[in-house]
Amino acid sequence: MTAKKIRVLVLTSSFPRHKEDWWQRAVLSIYSNMDLKKYDITVLAPSAPGAKSSETLEGIKVKRFTYFFPPSLQILTSGEGVLYTSKKRKLLGAIQVVTFVLAELLSTLRLMASGNYDLIHANWIIPQGLVAIIAKFMFRKPVVITVHGTDIFAVKKTNFIKGFILKYCDICTANSSATYEEVLKVYPKTNAAIVHMGVDIKEFDKKNKDLDWKKQFGNNSKIILGVGRLIKWKGFEYLVRALPRVLKKFPETSLLIVGKGPEEGNLRELAKHLGVDKNMQLLGSLGPGMLPTVYASADVVVSPSITIPETGEREGQGNVVLEARASGTPVVASRSGGLVDSVDGKTNGLLFEEKDYKALARNIISIFSDNTLREKLSKNGLELIREKYPWKKTSARFGKIYEDLAN
Image (tube, rainbow, N blue to C red; front, side, top):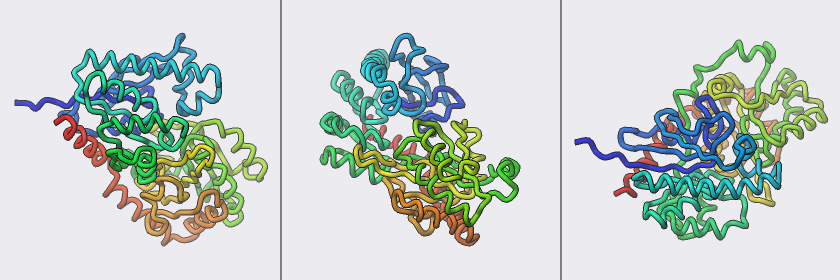
């Protein structure tokens, strides 16, 4: 007799909009790496231009809700994140935040009424966590909340709502010690656990290194790579500020930054002001098929995240430093948020204090100058990722949580 599958309704505000999309692919990976013979997963995500209203991605059923009419005017699913996109066009953004929450709530209630789901898993505490708790009260189903970073660090004025959500959820998972500690600050009695996000060790592999791709930046070029949304707390400003010091020692260095966001113009202006604009390229968004090549072909990957004092925003976990080391590339990271959970500063990656671009430059130069150091960081970083961070392990932990709640 075949065991009954555990049926899970997943709520998320960010999700790949199509098969090749890069946007929050980590959320898809949580579920696509589960044993789908045991779990029946349906993801409810917002619609976006070009996205299908219903489809299957990597074995996961996806349903998308429209949150504004006409749909062509929907602005919150641009790939920059709901919080940042809503601020760019304040009036329309504010209106759509309200319609987004209402549309997600109605879609959730409709699915819960029509489907025999065993539990709800909400990614991001606001608004998905609130929607999930309302559904819990109505349908008496357990709720898992997963916090990713900005949702728990920022928007402090909603902490009373977050506390309400944490009080009534059955378990809250945090992707790092930093997010875990913040959860307990908001509601100390939360049933919380750390469940790190993972990395696809088949997709990100040092075998993806492409010397021909690298040569387009010069036969002897050293490549510094940054990956992430171009927003202030990602700290790319300090990576650009470090570049002139690196160029004094290694004049053929190229800085490549993958990502899009509101800081793009400021980064270009800063590079021009520092006289390093010819050595920096903003590559925009790259599909998941290209990212593994770029990671493996770089000489160092830097995650220079900072804390924004006014909002508390900082790095939740830092998937970039996981993907880079899975690709065999050494990393340098700031001591910010959850980055310190996986980067020890000595054996598997180097650390520097937030905003200290001089120390960042010294770390990059050390890696470029010392083959032994570079090989040690590469080897130890790769071993760490393969041991602790494969998606299969992360997804299995969520599966165990589902089983405990369903039973």
